[in-house]
Amino acid sequence: MAIQTPLFPVSHPYIAIVAIFILSSGCSPSPNTAPTVDQQQLMKENEELRAQLQLARQETESARTETIRKKRDLEVTIEEIRRLRGESAAISAAQLSEPIIFTDPSEAVEIEVTKILVGMEAVNAEKIHEWQVEKLKKQGKAMVYFEVRVTNKNFPSGGKRVFPSDFSLVDNKNNTYSYAVTQDGISATIHAGRSTTGGIAFEVYKDAIPAELLYDTGLVTGSMGWKIYAKLRGLSEFEVFKKIAEQ
Image (cartoon, rainbow, N blue to C red):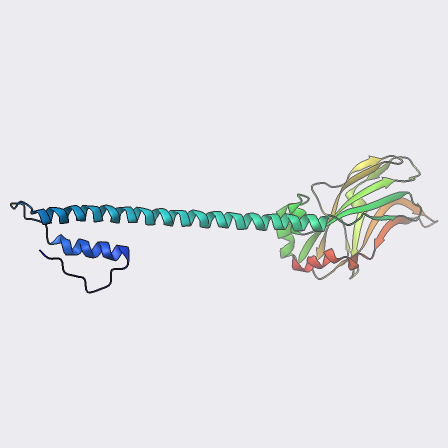
């Protein structure tokens, strides 16, 4: 039997395979008739085409699986890049070009601010918990973290006890904040010439900017017993605090 030429182009390999298979399907010999040489050749070609079609399907499925794998790998890579960028941003924000040093009028203690972190930066640095940040978002607040070093320069009664509660923060709207819990809260007794390092944090309103960090030395002056503070002013000029509104 002569094979007619298809009326449609068969440039696509799948179309060519299917077309030949359809045209040849009617040429199979009846069960009671011995196949001719041409029919045997055609049957052989059919088997080869079936094998090629099966192989093509397997290659297509393999290519699809590989594409899915590469997509997943790409998604993992993108997520890793985002994570690393977040950590990098936290590190760059955390490291001050040089410590900010301030002291009280009597120079009994010296305070150094070595890191400042806002919101998720403090979470990434494992200074506070993420649930604290999420809770503050609902309250219209953001967490501001300071890493500080306190040195006993000339404290009159010998050992100086240091706690997070010694610190407070004032914003540019005259709101005063007491300390919030951190994972590395500063706490120690330091003797003359010794230092201790730890964290302090404050829950600041998003529409405000920190203006002044205060440290209560525990000393008093005058007949009225006025407290003596070490004060770090001018915080509102710090670029890092502009991130508070973004939290």
